[in-house]
Image (cartoon, rainbow, N blue to C red; front, side):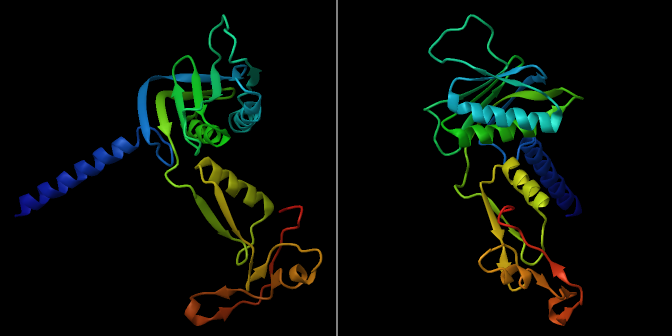
Length: 247
């Protein structure tokens, strides 16, 4: 009986290892619908171009370039191309295009080879989601260089509403933290930020017509400490609020 139990435990451990190994093919959260991991990698270097076949995509390209500069000090530039013309040159290293065959729900396809990166989506939501997957795949190799594993990815959101809640009424978070929090939500393809701004513990949004809401309601003379059942309150004033400009 003991050997049988031991073998059963080993069996479950092997299953867990196998499942975990499969899910770690690429480090993307949430995991894409379809992933094919290929050999080798693409080197994204300073000086490369991001090709756009639509003027509308220039905004998306500039976002990508700005984020790359901030995160990895890799500096790219935008190259506008005409989809109706044939070009006698090598394909640009990074290409983003709108493709009508893609569903318009944030879906995208991402192809990374040794020579190029191609992103295709029906709208800017899909392009944005593809960029987040690309950022999660990147590995910094010093200044001005990132490596990305070669792969083929097709993905779409499993849910229309994908969000997180932050209660700033009971615990106040400053403006810089809020920005960072939203960046993390975007990085994981969440599209809704539920910002809890008012409750009996604090009023956090400036209403110029009613200044007492923040002058009085924005601060409290004590906070609950310890287990809820003890109902103990300290005597430390606590508070803060966001101006309309902050919001």
